[in-house]
Image 1 (tube, helix red, strand yellow):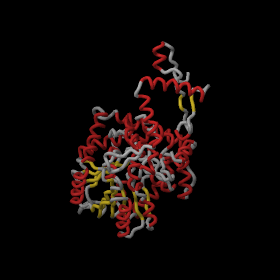
Image 2: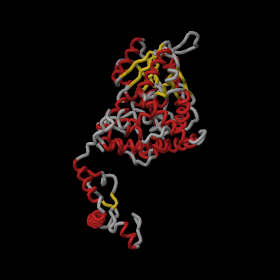
Image 3: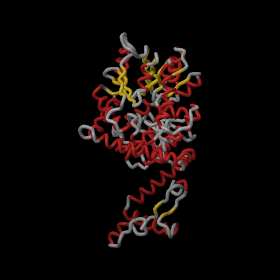
Image 4: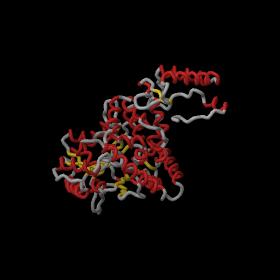
Length: 482
């Protein structure tokens, strides 16, 4: 793994505040998810498989579903924009915002805006975007990326939030939660009233009705999508469901997996701009459909990753994420990614480049906890292995594997040895004898650093007598470490 990744991992492991925050989050979220999933009617695993099938079928026929969705949303009064990449999406948002000549932009939580680094672009253009989700508001004040898909400020305790509010908002230093919430509420309410544009994400687009669905627990999403005169929704092209019945299933799994709730507090279906007689709502609604590498990923061996519904359950279940947190997932240059944890270790290489983010897939034990927690049953361990294999050419269903010559030679030698019982038996004996020379007293041996064994983990010393030989002779077989 590149040095920048190692450095972030070491810093995370040495941070007691982060370790405490991550432990508390994981314990609470995992327990809540299990309790909530137990309340599902019927077999939870059968519902997960059904959800997987719905998402897979939608993705396999994405072109036709997109055409249906666009036709229905336009008929409902949305203005539709297609963006091939981040730059196009940013330019569309800037054009809309500048047309309405209002600097203040109210934003609700949207991972797509994090993906395209929209806030930075808006600020550079002289606009003032304000995150209105409390967690996003906190990390925006700190100049950080979200540390989790669902709980952006998961890496912080109340004392750090109090210090941030003291420094950035000028309030007296306090770690009292109601006091901190009241301070944030005062600023955000003014933002809702002043904003000329509201920007939101989209959890699901419903092809049958041309509606967009947003879920939230704070209510800020409804303020962003109703108070400003202009609403811009950012949506990845893969976030479609065929009809309302499919939406109901996915919502029931999303809430339970993300926050341990049967249903989120605010589940909103937006159908159109403000109509005559409506008491509120924006006069104009824009929907930006973003590709930004998704179409290429769809046609690659990593395509299954696009089934993700962004619940964050795999992050909570992952033993590696629980130790290092979301900010440790960085590229070779040390720049972070909005998508961390197991799903981020697949999506980031897929969307942003195997060379830059491929090392993230090695931050995994491949224990399978992520797949067990996934509400749509994505084979995350299998996808992580595909990223680890390297050389994945996006857009090709049959990627070329570029195996280093030394590795290829080693595999050929192992194949020759392992394909013959006598050769394999002899190799075992020689390895056992050699290990006694290298590590005569320890049950473990260190290999050269380039192998990965020896920097942060030890390699178990091969047994002097192979297991089959001990079993056949009746000798007592000792477990490693005895």
